Amino acid sequence: MTSRRIVYSSVLIFSALFAILYPFWFSGYLFVVLLLLIPLDLLISLPGMLTRRILLTAPYAVEQGEDAKLLITTLQKKNFPARCLKMRLSSNGEDRDTVRRLKCGAQRGSRCEVAIDSGHSGVTIYYIKRIWSVSLIGFFAFPKTVKRRASVLVLPAPQKPPNVAALPRGVVFVPKPGGGFSEDHDLRQYREGDQIRNIHWKLSAKVGSPIVREPLIPPPHSRLVDVEIWNGARERDLILGRLRWISDYLLQREMPYYLRIGKNSPVTEIKDPEDLISHVRHVLESVPTPLYVRSVAPAGFSWVLNIDMRTPGAPEQEGGGEPA
Image 1 (cartoon, rainbow, N blue to C red):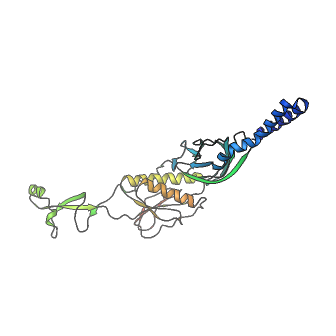
Image 2 (cartoon, one colour):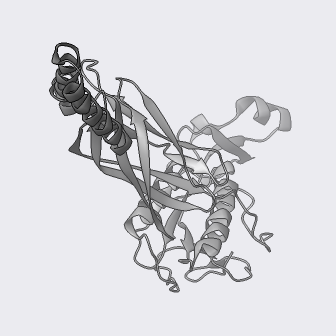
Image 3 (cartoon, helix red, strand yellow):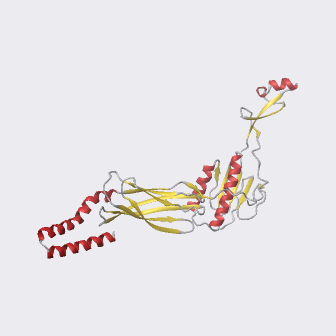
C-alpha cells in the first residue's frame, strides 16, 4: 500500500507540473481526474471494508508430523469490491509464541491456508485480534476488531513402553448377581438354589445331569492410568505416546479405565479413543506450561499404572503403581 501511495504522489506531482507548463484544457482534466481517484477509491471500497469478516478454522486433532493446514476464510453478506485483507496471526504454543503477517483475498469465500507446526505434541492456539481491509486501489486501510480463535491438538504416535508383559490380557467375567439375561454365559453343574429356567435342558439330557447356563458380566472396573507431568517437548512426546499405546491396549480389550494427567488434574473415565483425545486436549489447554511433579494416585483404585520417564514394572494392586 505504501508503494501505491508513492507512485500516486509522483504521478500527481507530474500532472501538476504538466498542467502549469501546457494548456489547461487538457492537462487540467488529467490533474482533476487524478485528484478524484482518492474519494472515488474510498466511496467504492467503503461498504466492503466495513462489512468484511473472517473465519478461522483448524482441525480438532492431528498426528505428530502430519501435514495439516489452518484455514482463514473471508466472509461477507454481499460481494462488495475491496483489494485484500491484512492481519497478524499469533500462535500460542506450550514452548514458544510466534506472530506472522498474512495477506488474504478480500472477495467473499476467499481462503488462505497456513501450515500448522506439528513437529511436537501439544496444543497450539491460533488467534487473530484485528484485520485491515485495504481499498480497491490501495490508498486506504481500515482496521476492524475480529477476535477469532482456533486451537489444534497434536498427538504423538503410540509408543510401546518397555516391560508391559504384566498388563491384563482381557476382562475377567463374574457371575451376574441375581441371574437374568446376559450375552455372555458359562456352563456349570446345577447347585441348590439355582433357578430352573437357567437349566440347559438339551445339554443336561446329553450328559445325564442338570447343567445350568450362568449369566456373566464384566465387573465394575477400578483401573487408573496415572500420568506424570513432563518437563519439555521431548518428554511430552514420549509420555503421551506411551499413554496412547496403553489406552489402545486397554480399549481394544474392552477395558475402560480412569485417567489422570498431573497431580491437580481431574480423574476422567475413558471409554473410547475420543474420550482420551478430549481429556488430553482439555488438560493441555488448561495447563499450558506444566511443572514436573510426582503424581500421587488417589485411593479407591484396585489397579493403578503410572506412566512417566522411568523404566516401568508391573502395575500394582490396591494403591500404588509402577511407571510405564
